[in-house]
Length: 398
Image 1 (tube, helix red, strand yellow):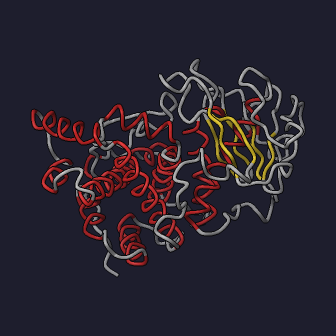
Image 2 (cartoon, rainbow, N blue to C red):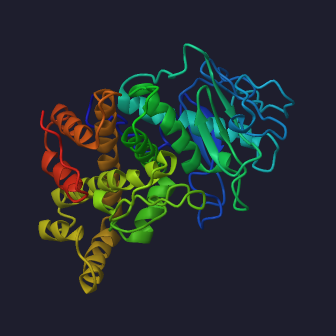
Image 3 (tube, rainbow, N blue to C red):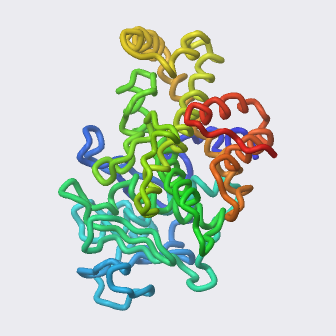
């Protein structure tokens, strides 16, 4: 696989523009400043090949009327209750003329987001994701709204609650991408009947990382992120707060394995246990980005070396250094972030494809990640080891 799987089309506003089908999505929650209007994306399907629903050979959307989650009722797909109108493409086969105020917008935008995330990660994987439920259901069922506050990714379906007053979860890119991340992880690694809590925590962390890296494919998100941080990404930001108001989880964190409080309930413990792993990978993303800035002489090596651990007054000095360079060379910062994003996406994809679903541990995942880095050129092993060592995660011996 090439070092840049997306070539010159580093962002979604350019990719598949000539050949894809158009949808409108909100790349970040619309209550955030700068994201009140949806943006146009192109999914990798020829116009006219996606039918009303939307629906295709892999998935279909059903806008169920006043539905309770399947997990509350004990029912399973396919949904057979009352439904609302389907989203219908225009005469040219596109769905971007459906306005946010239209009742079918939620169906169109949730489908567009699911397809967008799959397009990104199938490029990193180098192959199509096979549904882990394919022996039972041929297609994924997508329910854009249920009478619940949360979202669910389960056997054969994903469905989204009403969230809070800030908006429907089916319109929240992070929330949808996170649930698609679960499907990708189960499709690549597997879904054993006996799921160790560390495997479940790993899946939660990686579903968050799927959402983070997918959001970095939007020009608007990257521009906003770099402008707010002035190029120094070691901070809580619009990208690190997964789902914004939906969950209380942040990829920018200092959690180590020792910091994780024990909880006998694995359904809640997995959310705490995911934080050290997720934080280590976010640190790795920033380190990769800063290494590219050093290579392009945007910042000095000693600045990058101290960026991770600096606290107090020295942080202000670092911010000034980054801000001066960013003001002069903003496009170079943008390119560095896109390159770091794509390397990390390929690294995770390679790692997942070599990760067994049994005898699982964080230590073995890191060892597998080091092997995946060797396949990609073997330049980043020390960064990977250091990022996880700070979280008290040491790679297992081969």
